[in-house]
Length: 106
Image (cartoon, rainbow, N blue to C red; front, side, top):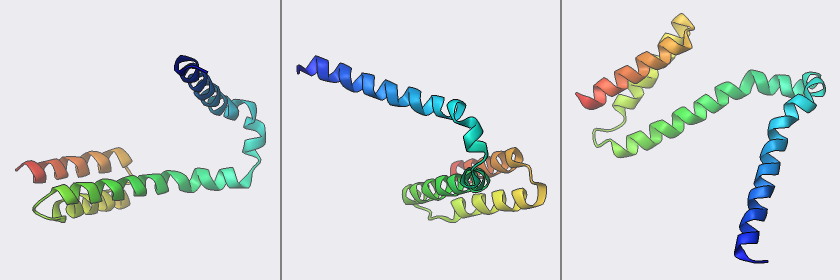
């Protein structure tokens, strides 16, 4: 098999897998709605993903910041307090991001 054929074969396999993963919820939608695990993941996974993204971002930003992690900590604390008090995700994210950017750039 030549290099060109190998590349085309890999692209075809990736396209097939991508298509199958995109089509799965439509094909198996009725079955998925009856599964308890799917409901549990739907309730817990978004928070888990956001927590992991937040931790990854905080650790990466703190390593680059010579002043330490206090700016990241204050921004995260602001997001937590706003989310707890207002339950408005957009407001929490925008205010936390704005506070962090102001602290890092002033």
